[in-house]
Length: 115
Length: 116
Image 1 (spheres, each protein chain N blue to C red):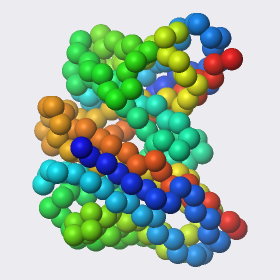
Image 2: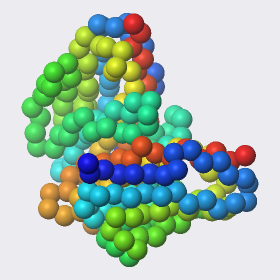
Image 3: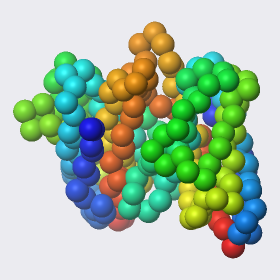
Image 4: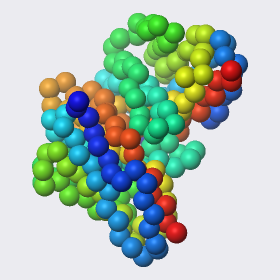
């Protein structure tokens, strides 16, 4: 079945360590996104990518980095510079052209806890 | 700037009651899309409905119905005869063209608890 796969589902990290969250999609979507979810704050956009080898900062990009070397993959690295990294991270994808309405398809999320 | 307000952070209802989740949005564009997503405890957001700004027809899908009113910038969601499986967090979202892509803004979500 087509969809978005995020891994790991749960991740624990010590302060000062970088961690990379994986996101893979087989929907043949051009655009991919990373959102952060915190209680009472909804979803906030970290980074997005409309095509391979190109990505843009979202509203809260500080302390995060991404790459888009393949259409199917959009990994997110949470660096030690991120001051409050404990959160639920959601990856999403969408069509970029041909009637893109902004409808997003989501993975199941990765919960990161910093110890 | 676009904004989505979901004033109800948590709602509890008894099974079989009807419940309405409110969503108010702000945008300067004339062309935009509105969405509702459901987030069950598993975490994945599930698409429920999309409405474009030129289509104000209300929609019904089974026990779900949506009321879109441009005059009040609202896109409310009603669940009729609620069931325990409806317990989830529901997000309203607004999508509009910005800088060459469809920028999506989410509300903070409404947590619905349906009590058996």
